[in-house]
Length: 509
Image 1 (cartoon, rainbow, N blue to C red):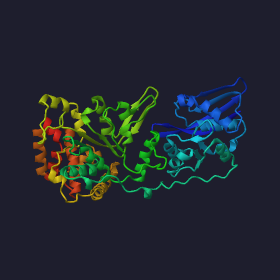
Image 2: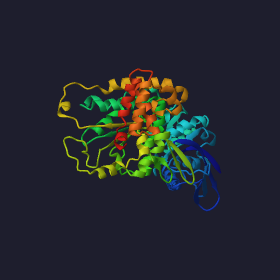
Image 3: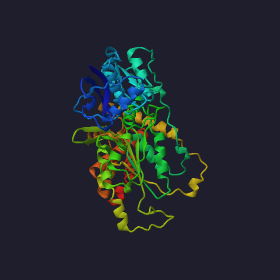
């Protein structure tokens, strides 16, 4: 007796169909699973056996073989529990085979037959649109996630008995409808507000420039100057996620198992803030079966690295590829996966190990050698990939007690969104959406500089020793500043502001 059940599995953040073949033959009782199953898949036989018995069905005491096709790709996770159990019930005649072919099944089984949630449902629901006209049969906790996309119908089943009744048509079920599957359902940004920040007007300006052009930024200042507070408010001035961006971000969070069951769609731009003791696999991604790291979880959002020089140097150097390419490639002997990692890097650091270099209120206890060793933890190539280096000085008492109301995040975000829209229209023919993504050919086309600007750039490059990459970054930042000013051509004042955002280059020149 042979039964076939369609399920799905993840490969990176994408999915592919898996045909679960169940064969029950004469012979001594045995349960074997083939098709490169990982540990959780191999253990499914015990969960499936108990779930079938405790749901009131007979478990066949025969030779059982489960094949997961394609057999040359590793399968992991507990999502194959429900397909295997239904396949066994189909092979024994309890489930109708002619109706089973109309469903894609996913779900983990508890020992009493309840269907439990699994990760990665959204990528499977997206891919399932090209697999045929089957409906998705999912755990109730995953139903919202599976129904977000305009894909196959989604049915939620609480236990194995409900799954059998649904497939056999013994009970009427209504497809699950998602209320989150539209761009109109996305709310405005909320949370902290720039109106709560006193002083630091030049830092707010730098963060507005960074948000407008999606530029990476490094904040440097003494302890307590507000670096972390400012960084945590940066998401409130970024444009809201489009539905397509939200869907792409949600796929990554679904694969990582981070989705909220009540809110199956990631509605706000991610803000990832890993501790400096994080491992390379935790930040970049990896493992025996690669999973996305924090750089991918920050896709379409912000990766905030506090105490930047305290991260291990090899981990910091791994940031070069995602900062340059917007993705991370992870290679293993059996497979190679690519995770999207198009994030905005915001880093914060002290100017020296004690933190008080240049602070008029505290004396610095660090020698020049110690300061140089501390800064040398950040390599030149890494600093070149950070567009804005911003000093964050200590806030004075007068600034803290100033009664004037600072600009709100909503006001700043309106300017940022207008500039982002201008960039999308300008760069749409090239498949780009922000100034930070421009390559050399785009810079030559969209970053015209007047004669005075050329002279300023020449003097700055000679005096400060800017690299070719720094020169390109200056032009891209100047383009954003000109966009904020409503100027079509980059002028001397725009370049001057962009150059003064290369603080660490000046110090180390």
